[in-house]
Length: 126
Image (cartoon, rainbow, N blue to C red; front, side):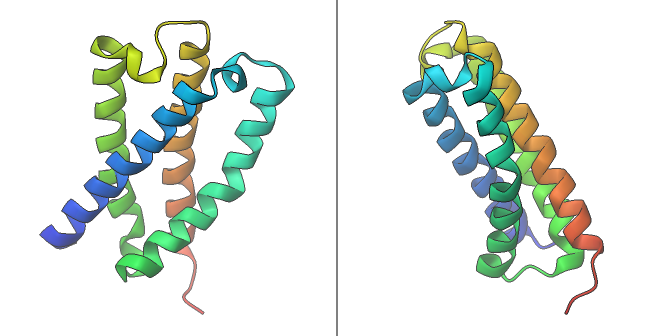
């Protein structure tokens, strides 16, 4: 993977993390558990698949490199999330009850991105 792809996917990871953080901040009730939280987790599955395919199309990255590129974005997002939860919880709307579930959803999303990229990367190009 070239330096250009490395930086592009680090930026994509940062942007997607920020979008997720804003979802947690502006829709905290979705992260208080229950049916709404379950629906959010379930909706994340097809949304992530679509996003991985879109990232491949937009960047022109070959299928066999999508996993390593996604790992760069995932590490960036996890780094930013760890820093923000520790020192900037107000970014997520404060330290209310929604913060732990929001962080769980973010980690779920990172793992989901990596899983989708691993599966997509192993598929034969059609």
